[in-house]
Image 1 (cartoon, rainbow, N blue to C red):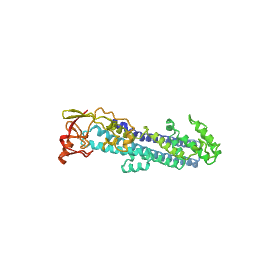
Image 2 (image 1 turned 90 degrees about the horizontal axis):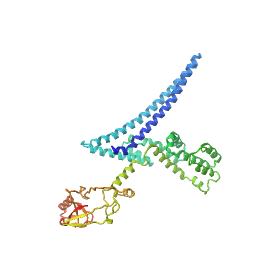
Image 3 (image 1 turned 135 degrees about the vertical axis):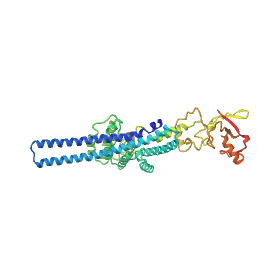
Image 4 (image 1 turned 180 degrees about the horizontal axis):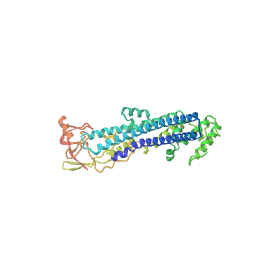
Length: 416
């Protein structure tokens, strides 16, 4: 359950917020329509009391019917949108419930298979979320469609965001400003500067087109009131009016740079993700870093002295591994494999008080039933794997160095 709570918070929060937003919008629309219908009823009542003609009453009734029809249509549309949002919430709850039930009864015959299947779906969901939050919308849609994950991911929610990004890439700001207006209250709570940056860019474009008088009017309209920290940017904009559009004077040359549009696209992508998700990072890199940190080993083999202590015919040997030395990397260890190895370098090292040793050949645990054995060249393998090798080849061939040894030269190991 802790695993679900820590990784699946956004899975439920995002559709719930969408459902809540649609409910509030529907309530606002219906309140407006209901007031208009009530006004029509009042007008009709007042007119009939004055002794109006049949034509006047017929006209008022026609207007009332029209308003009632509009109200019914908008109510139907609002209910349809709310039902769709509620369906997504329900489907995601059922999906999480499947995992919770499997974890609560791991003794069931199919429990392990169900858990592995569910985790595979979760990995696909994490990949889709990562693609969406980094602007790879086409890849996210293809993966969601291939795995039938549209209701379990936010691809439909990000569809509108991709359209806004496309408009910004074409240097059009209307869609982005509309998005800012629709989410103004939440963006204000997040101290977002998205709308202000868009207004600044629109002013810059007016200056770039030498429409300076229009730019002054625009500044009076949108920059007359400003938040803390915005005054310096406004002053730089006003300073642009005194320079030609091909100026090399800073910061005006930078303000006129085309790269600012790319920066706006990147900021919008970040602001949109911040609006939807409580976590700063997607779940995929977080889970990946946690897993790599748990496997990350700090000790280079050639920097640790192998302490050999002879006790009769046995050897006491300290075994260390390192994820960053080619001589000690393990092929099945994710932290040793590229490109994850580069990511693991920057992560904390695992703190393991009790190691669990596994034979590199058979992948079986090294314990009292499968004693660790050391070859003369210092390589350690499990007793069962070495005996199996003796049966097949009549001798022991070290998989790492290709040296050949007989069983008599192999010694037991006590791992300290």
